[in-house]
Amino acid sequence: MSGVHLSCAIMAHPKRSAAAHRLAASLPGLSPRVVLDPEPDGPPATLRTARAAWAAAPPGATHHLVLQDDAVPVAGMADALAGVLCAHPDLPVALFCEWGSGTGSMARWASMGGFGLAECVDAFVPTVGLALPVATASALVRAIDSHDPAEHDDEVVARFLEGLGRSAFVTVPNLVQHDGDTSLVGNDHTMGARRSALLARPGEAVAEDVLHAPGLVPFVSWRRARAAAIRWDTAAHRYESHVALMREELRQAGVEHADLCGALDRWAASPTGRTLEGALGYGLLHELWTVAAALAVFAPFPLGTPASPPSPDLTRALASLGPGGLRTVTPDAAQDPRTVEALGELAAAGFAFGARAAATCGPAPGIARPAPSRASEPRPGTREEGGTGTFRRREVG
Image 1 (cartoon, rainbow, N blue to C red):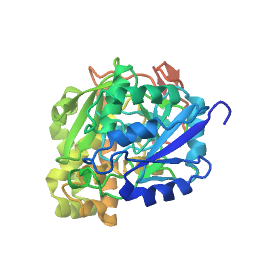
Image 2 (cartoon, rainbow, N blue to C red):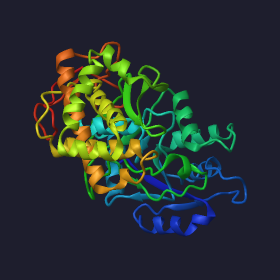
Image 3 (tube, helix red, strand yellow):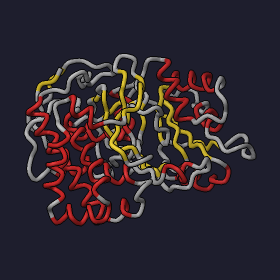
């Protein structure tokens, strides 16, 4: 597209050279350069290879995309990304966020509201696929030189952008899937399956609207399958802390725990609820229900009246919430199609409860809700009524 000249590098360990070259061959329009670990016999690390990949932008490029060797682009990825970069040439743009992250919740919100980019809010920036303006990429290369090579590249990128007072934004839906769960740095043993929070269908467009994060972003912590949240500094654009007591956050927002549990109990009495509780136990259902409700209560844009049954858009947005959050404690159940479908129904019902509660309680106190925008900085705006989402869009800002 006019004004955007995108270059691409694929970073890989020599053990995965064949996979990296297959990935390069699948993207002829980008002519990716395969960049191998410069110290293949050294300790497992990603930062030294990332440095080489970010330094591989050729003269004349305006933006540089780095893909990891286990990235699986959706059909039409390059054109969709070029459109995003043309609309937002200064933004760092991630193409993937994993389904158990706080950024995954941002992607779900963005999908519900019709936004095409969502602010990344974790203590790391997802680097399975990441595009930067070349000037930013060059500055990142210089910054990497001051870090221990054993550090994780996704955390280094997050701190680098934080130092610039900037955030990365993930495409919604994601333009890249993460393939496989065998990690050279051991992530597969602790993190489980890392899949896209919301993967694009082939040729699916990405909208231009940008969704900035509110002060609190609920998610299901995959470490312990617990209801949790990220506290986000909306002024400094940085991760602030981890919140583990979502019951208290909801209570302060006006949602009593007894009401939340009562609604869950009523859903759990349904045939799907009884089957799911029998398979996973009440505790896991409670944690997922709590986060689903909190996603409605703390949504960064006004919600209208929830539809019943939920729309396909809402169902799709919430489908990965349970599997992503439960993947380390119930890996088999979280991949069983029947269980995954039931988890989606639970999440949709919990979200609908939270939307009704939010309509009664009003905006959650003390939580900054920046306005969505089409530009790289938040600004007041108006969203159109109607649309394809589950909730009627209303004036914001």
